[in-house]
Image (cartoon, rainbow, N blue to C red; front, side, top):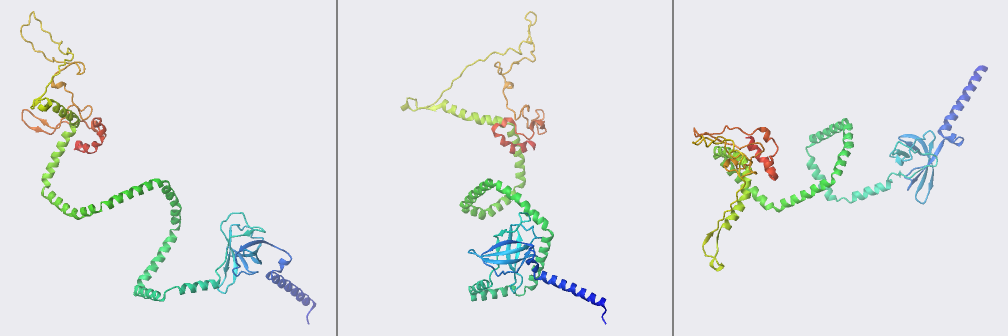
Amino acid sequence: MITRRTKVQLVIFAIITLLGVSFVGARYAKLDRLVLDRTYTVTAHYPQSGGIFTGAEVTYRGVGIGTVGDLVLTEEGVDVKLDIENQWDKIPRDTIALVGNRSAVGEQYVELQPQTDDGPYLVDGSEIDDVATPIATEELLGNMSATVGSVDRDALRTTVTELGLAFAGTGEDLQKIIDTGNSFIKTAEDNFDVTTALIRDSNTVLEGQLASESSLRTFADQMSLFTSAMAGADADLRKLIDTGSFAATQLRTFLEQNGVELSELFANMVTTGEITVRHLPAIEQVLVVYPYAVLGAFVTVGKKNKEDGGSGFWDAHFGMIMHEGPLCHAGYSTTRRNPQTDREDLPLPNVGCKERIDQSNPRGSQNLRRVSPFPGAGEPVIVGYDIETGEIGWDVAQAPESARGNVAPPSLGADSWKWLYLQPMLDH
């Protein structure tokens, strides 16, 4: 016999069970929305429905956040109402509403794919214009059929046959390629941060290239001119290439046969070059004055025909211009003779003109103006000669290194570029 206490427990259990089943059923059937609205509505404008239906799930980053409401036909397509739960209020407005297929059966749903993480966010009444729908099955099958029908069967048969011949017996090689590809992908994943940094930093390089656009354009133009000149000289270049090996062989034979003589010749040329360098200003002066001397020779010696009033013989015309400069006094007054007691010639040591060249008319080769290869070098000396022994000596004092340096001497003037090949001879 059931006691009264047991009956009360059974009644309470039945009531609790009924309430639980009712609550779960109401939540599953979403009957609570008939009483309490806990969603906000967003409208997505589609050119076509893409198979979406009322009650389909709405997801955000793979998480269900609501359901599809009413579908409203418009002149532009279909407006789909998306009922999103209020707790999902941080969905950016910059979002794509994609209609996707959950399975091969064709169960559609709406996936919201945000393009940014920042606001503004969707609210009740917001609209989404950036939408996408899957390709219709009939359209996909039609396109595939058209693609397959456009392929030439004979060409396809030839392609398959050639591929079979190409890959026949290459299973191990293909396996190595696949394995290497996996290793490459693994290495790329391990260096993902380095790759992204490289891509990000490449923007700096590209900006530098953009800033050098004019220089690159000039380089391209000059390279075009160079290649055009090379193309114009194609025949000469071909001839040079054809005959270059023969000339190189002859040059090598010449060097092998005359190696010792050439070394001596080059050594002597270095000495000659040193002497020439030391007297380079004087040589330059001779080259400047020589044309005037030749011109004066044509004026001095000439022939005038009788028809022109001349004698018909070669005539030489000479003239002398006498100009006596100021006399030099300094240097002659240091030694005096006493006519009362001295009757013989007395030695006159250190007697001579002591004045500067530009103040009087000094005589003697010692007063000749000389050019020097660099200031303060004095008389340039390359080779020494001993009068007593009659031998030539090469160990002579050279100009101080401080006077030479790596800078072209002022005496070269506008031809200072010559110092590039003259200095090695001086340093030899």
